[in-house]
Image 1 (cartoon, rainbow, N blue to C red):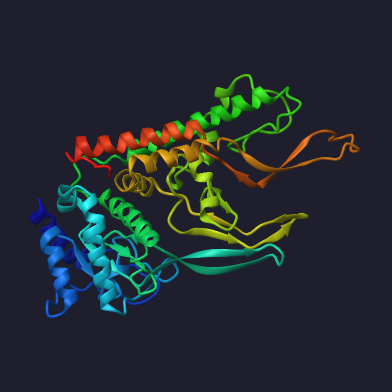
Image 2 (cartoon, rainbow, N blue to C red):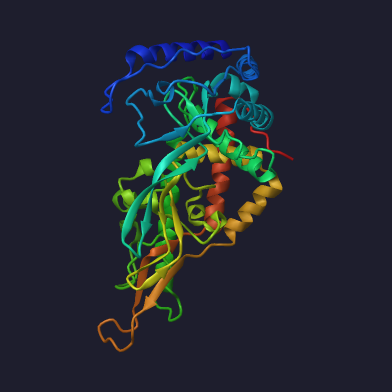
Length: 418
């Protein structure tokens, strides 16, 4: 299988030169370069070792076309921005880190047979985000660094620079978890897989969304006659006024569920991309994605919201993450399984379960207004969906699904660290 994979990678690089869609609106098209390993340098020697051992080609020096060339389009700077590796020592350190810290956690047979074979090392990989200043009503673009990304013909790995300190324990932990997820995400597009789990994984998300939405309606009905309840609404979909819902199933149609699906590919709602909010000074404060049974938010930021006043309400600095695609989420679960001990997993589950409630800033209207006396007016711009027992149960179900797929389809065990 390893030799077949090498042959297919060579064939794919060759085919790029003749069969890609080259309809680039931005200018001339340059074909990708064929790869050669210069073994006269320390970097070349490490590259050769990894290629011989795993069939994976790490490249720190390449032409623009090697990452911009795509099966369907040319990726220009409007979608992606990179900075090249300037120090071979940084590339060597990243390769050795992957060899020592990342690959040993994955089943060797999976690396040999299905691991992405073409990995481009970058000093930085960045995607575009938007900065919104409420006080001045201004929008401004900004580039945000990410771990890397998957293209149709390669994986881009960022942070190959001296500032990214792989000797720091926290940085090593971050790099290990993110790189495992990135490689597995790309692995899922491998045509040689005996079966692909993503359709079933997405269906799990559909079913779970319906479960969460049903729970929201049931909670709303239970709170209806309460004088103290805040009419909790975990999915921010239930009106504050009207009456209790006697037939919840009528609100669980595909159309109703569309806006609340966790993966962007399952919905036509643009707002889905920006609904994960971090409020506070630390990424640890962001827990909304737990309510969607995700380990982490998506790779990259959708928007940054500067502290400001909107309609008389002062909002803190916050960040809107992009949502995970299903392959990203699947990769995060593989990383969760093989990089955290049982005790670390349980601590994570405990944290998710301890936050079962919705937080919402609400404004109670003045009692002097006879039209709306005593009613609650939600501020929908500041909603968090926390986890709770339902989210933990779904996370455990995803863990079991991922482990079973590796065992039954790839005949490989995901070994949890002790």
